[in-house]
Length: 212
Image (cartoon, rainbow, N blue to C red; front, side, top):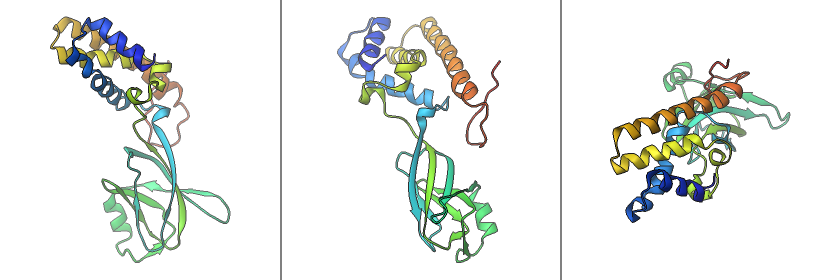
């Protein structure tokens, strides 16, 4: 289902062709996408970026679209090897390395602020880092297509219908029906994303559910 098909389906289900309603369909869809992406961890939400840390600077700036970290690794230039850092709280890093001037190869990282990570210990050399992190994928509203629309559109459709029917202040029984269909679709999606695709997950940054 591409965006044009999704818009047609929303209008057909609601039988609403009012100009104000149509103008708000992009909002309905984007709100549904955010609800889904905050309920299920999909591979399409993962991004990868490389950067660098500077000797004597314990802080690392986060990407603008960063939502949550999955992993952070220091790359050793001579060998090409990866050393994965452990995710800790800021207070752990401050306690373990109370003097920022104490430097070495970073072993830990923590969320220091909205746009910044802090490393511990402070890097003693310039080096490259690689981060895997979670971000919102480009919306089907902007791209015309999306992984959800192409591979698993029921939660997208019923999520958008919930938003649309809320906007319309629709009947409660219809709202409950859409909610039920949305919940069923999310459970199926969680079985795929957090279950079948996640059975051998090593790191704790991902949710895992049992699959029968």
